[in-house]
Length: 78
Image 1 (cartoon, rainbow, N blue to C red):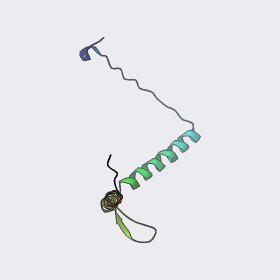
Image 2 (spheres, rainbow, N blue to C red):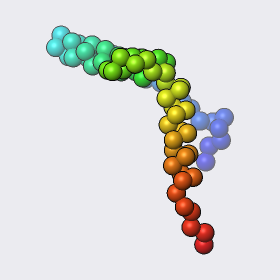
Image 3 (cartoon, rainbow, N blue to C red):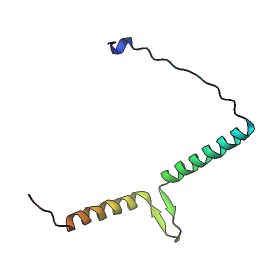
Image 4 (cartoon, one colour):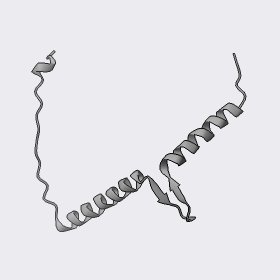
């Protein structure tokens, strides 16, 4: 068994030469991924109803509601 000092890490570089159709599809796909990721990180947004929402406030409300639901249900002790 090799020790950590004896492990050799290798890196490889690959080039990808897409066709024009593939390049268009890649650009469209990565653009969509970038948009979804950016939307997920938004702190505030306006919903379909027109109300402004804050991601942190919404998360806090969800945690509070889950905690209240849990305490409202009776617990059986063994």
